[in-house]
Length: 337
Image 1 (cartoon, rainbow, N blue to C red):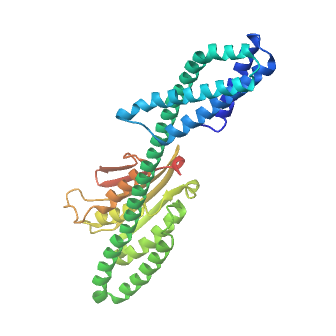
Image 2 (spheres, helix red, strand yellow):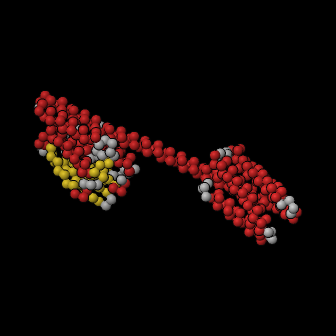
Image 3 (cartoon, one colour):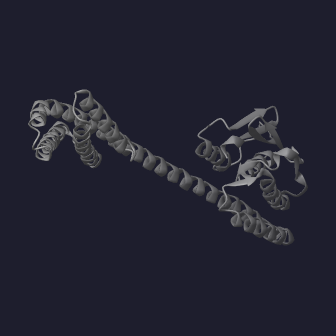
């Protein structure tokens, strides 16, 4: 129980007993002494009960202790109080008779209160244990989510790295100059992203800078066939976004936009504000009649999973294929930061 509840209850008990005895006609000195020792054993009993049932939760057959402990404690307390006060006022026979006549009433009242304290201590103890259990479960769930998020972020770089290395391998013989250029761009990109790997959130401006570095690498692969247009509202550049969340969407757009199309492909990255959301759209043309390119589908699925782990929602990533245009819409709640 709270550290102020028990002393407060003791003061109330003392005051109640004192005024009751005074109204019964006893002198204030006797009334105060009786009330003081009675409240003292009351507080002691409450402390013992609270300590016992806070540390020990009886179950099954042991539930009888909820009744036995308060009763035994009440007998001990009331008779200790009786003999102490009888010794203290040994010359007051009228007070002895009062103590004898009020013993049973005191015992019943004391036992009832101690029993209620025992029940309260049990309830509080169970609530505290349940709260502690809930906290541990929440911590374990958060650790699990953090571990999965870290794993997803770490998978992004090898996924992109393998694609880049395959391209470098293909260019090494046919166009060694482009292969060297791509190696330099790749090393610069990886240096920047690894240095920021500990950050969970970046500004959209930072993400776009990494994205442009990534696109420089892709332009080496695809040359004049690839063009990117950015249409980002200026006020959106300082908004926060989970790290490396847009790159897989653009990578997916390049993969599906350039597959089966021989002419130049223009990909649009649009950023705008809608209420509490930062909206990022990635648009790419595609040929609906062409067979889908091979791959694991890691890009979109990883983004969708990360959004679910961060926000607990599955409606923040939407895709739409309309005629020859494929659009991915990403919604980032800014109030969740």
